[in-house]
Length: 147
Image (cartoon, rainbow, N blue to C red; front, side):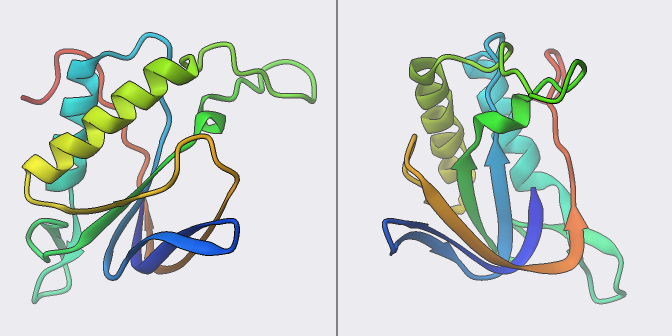
């Protein structure tokens, strides 16, 4: 995920999701991921403190600053580049599971009070944003962490 001043996702030249200050989150779903993983990830995204407080320290969450979350499903995050020059995506979830867990992730974010914008699942998209910081964080939520 990336902290942004603004971000938008476009499909066929039309803006389908936009936020001002907040987080641009690329969501990769592995075949082994579960509904519980999606809910845990939403909690982590909502609570991760990567916005500055009045002292300039990264001590505020997206919730604290009333930021938005633009979440875009992205199977290419699961690329395996360990062999050869062409990535494979064998660990990526099938589209049906990805869609279900992506929707659960978005619903869990909204339950946490986040303003959520989204891309269109399986559509060719253009994503535009203004990085803030820049602050980029890779978030993985292993089983048994967070509640």
